[in-house]
Every structure is written in structure tokens, then in C-alpha cells.
Image (cartoon, rainbow, N blue to C red; front, side):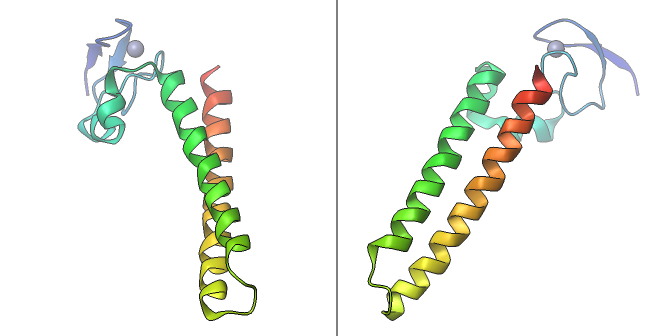
Length: 104
Ligand SMILES: [Zn+2]
């Protein structure tokens, strides 16, 4: 383990760190892959985009639940899928909220 300079904020950080502890810039290969296309964007923007995704997931889930007749077979499948989307969306928005809170 050695110290390197963060390409974004120039803090001295461990080369084994996944992200820069100061500015959140992805350091490891994995973190760079994860952030993908958003690499050059500001971290706050990524978080905001993610919360939009989370909310749209919940909206789609809600639509799936109410869209089809209650007693049809397709209805129960889409309700299960809709409920799943809402749960994932909720968990996601909580995680995004925590990330936002953590980065402040
Ligand atoms: Zn940094």
C-alpha cells in the first residue's frame, strides 16, 4: 500500500482505496467501472440521477399494480413485479439519501 495523489482534489490517499475519501473520485478499477459514464460528472449529479431512477422505478411499480384488472393472472404477475419495483426503488432511494447525507 502506498500513497498516491487524487487526480481530482490532489489529496494524499491510499492507492488501495476504492474512492477518494475527500471528493469521492473513483480510484480503484472497480470503482471506475461502477461509475462508468458518470466518471467525469460531479458526484452530486450522480446521486441526483440515481434518486430520479429510484423514483421512476417506484412510479412504474405503482402503475404495474393499478394498470391490470385485480383478478386476472397477468394482474397478479404484474402486481408482484410492481411491488418488487417499489421495494427496490424505496431501498435505492434510502441508499441514495444516505450517500447524500454521508457526502455532506
Ligand atoms: Zn479526491
